[in-house]
Image 1 (cartoon, rainbow over the protein chains, first blue to last red):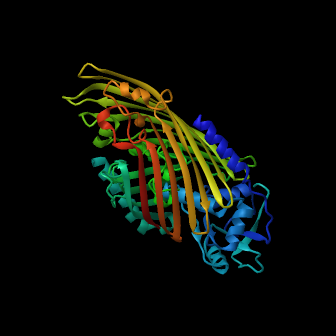
Image 2 (cartoon, rainbow over the protein chains, first blue to last red):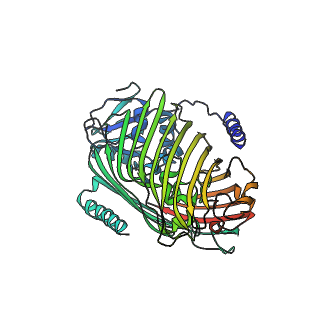
Image 3 (spheres, rainbow over the protein chains, first blue to last red):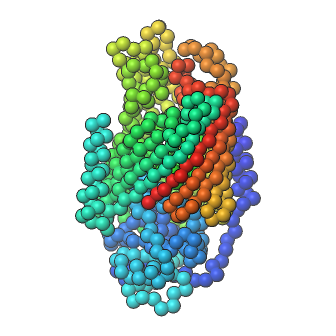
Length: 148
Length: 395
C-alpha cells in the first residue's frame, strides 16, 4: 500500500513542476582543436562527450573536454540549451564518473580567453564559447544538429 | 588479508608508476570527510547515546588509460561509521575497463576484477560523501549491514549506454562474489556462529531510460545472490544456505530548483539450516520498502533535503506481530518494520568543500540487522533519533 501512496505523491509533485522549454538568448558555439576530424555532432553525441561517457574520437585519439566554472553564465546557457540538462545534473554525472573509476571530469577553465588558448594548445580538445567573433587560428567551430 | 595487501600494492604501483610516466593518461582524485554523529535510544550508530567522531571517510583513486580500448582504475577507502559497518580500509574497486565499442552513440564497457555495483542510484559512489544526497542513505535500499556485500564484487560487469532521438538507455549486468569478513558472519547470523558465511555469487541486471528532455530517468534492477555457511568444528549451526532475490524500481525527476528521487524494493530472503539443538531453520519471507526524497536547491550554495524511508521485513507481517513466535526466541514487534523521516541541509562553502548536517526520527528497527536471531539484534527502542554533521573535502 505504501508503494502506491509514494508513487502517487511522487507523480503529483512532478506534475506540478514540469519544466518549460526556454530559448537561448545568445548563440554559443562549440569549438574544437584543429586536430579534431569532426564537423558536426548531434545533441546526444555532444551530451555523451560532456558527460564523460564518450572519451575517444572516432580515430582513437583522446577527447579533452574543457568547461567554464559551474556558475559562469555561458556554462549555464551551454548546459541548458545545447546539452539540454541543468548544470547540477552534469556535475552529478561527473562525480559519478570520476569516483567510480569510469573516466575523467572536464577541466574547468576560468575565462573564455583561457578556454580558447587551452583548446588551441590541446590536441583532441573540445569546449564552447559565447558569441565568438574572432577565434584563435588553432581552433574551429563545429555544428551541433545533424547526426554524424 | 594477503589479497587486500596485494591489491593495495597494485593500486599504489599504478598511482606512482603511471603518474610519473604519462600524466596525460593518468588521473587521480580523492576525498576526506570527518564528522560528529550520534544515535539516541538506538545502537545504530553509537552505543549508549554517546556523541562520537566515528564518522570518517577517506579515499583515493587512480585511473590509467593504456590505449583507446583499455584502462585500469582503482580506489582505496578508509571508513569509520560507528556501529553501522566494519571500521577499516577496503579496496573499493580495482578493475580493467575494456571498451568494446568506439561509437559516439553507443558505449559498451566490460569491467574485469573488483567492479562496482552500479545498479542503484547511489551504489557506485556510496562511500564518497559529496556524491551522496545525505550523510546516511535510506536504509531500505542502502542497508548499512550489507555494505560489504552490496557495493563491490570480484567478477565481471558489463554496461552499455546507447543514446539517440528516443533518449538514453543504460543496461548493466554483473556476476561475481564479495569476500566476507568474520564480522559479517556475526552480523548476518549470530555472534554465537563460529564458522564463516561466504557468498557463492551475486548476479545483477539493471536498465535505466532517460528521455531526450533529460528531466526524467526511470529504471529497474534485479538481484539474485546465494550464500553458504561453513561451520567450525564446534558450532551452533551445522550447515546453512541462504538466498536473496531483489527487485528495485527507480525514478528521478530533475527540475530547475529541485530534484525528486524514489526507489522501491521487494526482496525475498531465504534461510535454511540445521542447528545442534535439533532446530531446523527454514525461513522464507518477502520484505518491501523504499524511499521518496526531495532535494531543494535553496540558493546556489545551499541544498535542503526531506526524505521518507520505509521498510517492512515481512510483507505478510507488516506490524511484526509474528516475531513473538520466532523459533530462536521472541523478538519485539518493532523489529518487523522501520520508518524514517530525515531532514538535512548542505552548504557548499567552496567548489570542493561542503558542510552537511541531518536529523532523522525513526519508528521501528527492522533495518538495523537481519531479524532472525534475537542475539544478533541491534538494540533500539520503538522510537529513536539520529543526527550527523560532516565536513567533506574532495579533489
